[in-house]
Image (cartoon, rainbow, N blue to C red; front, side, top):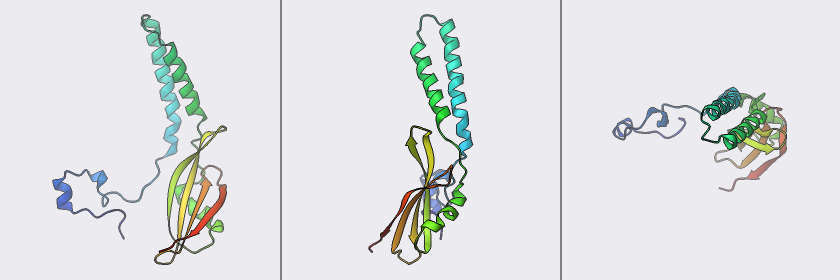
Length: 161
């Protein structure tokens, strides 16, 4: 079985299809490293510093509103929880005890839960299908990507063919 859609190579070349859109050139989706996000507030703060310096030399433009907005954005970015303790590969292992049917295949997506403590908390959302062909059951479960705690009760439903 191949991930994605099989595209005829001749058709792809005629349409000038880039390699990153060719499903045969790209495998399964891997979540980007969230550690890169910790630099975003520093980028915004560097823009704040540049804007502040510009306000000193360009006195005919008032940068006060921009400085306030950019500072608030930088603070917000520092508050966002970007830490992952549970990687994409460990998710299924963490939720096995909560699935009541044999696992056939599954889909994992990274979502974010809004709360006032961490602003955005990373959450793995998993859809697990039973092993029959076609599957008879589907379970949706969410797990906190930082703490590994299952959020709420898993939702299992019958799939009517």
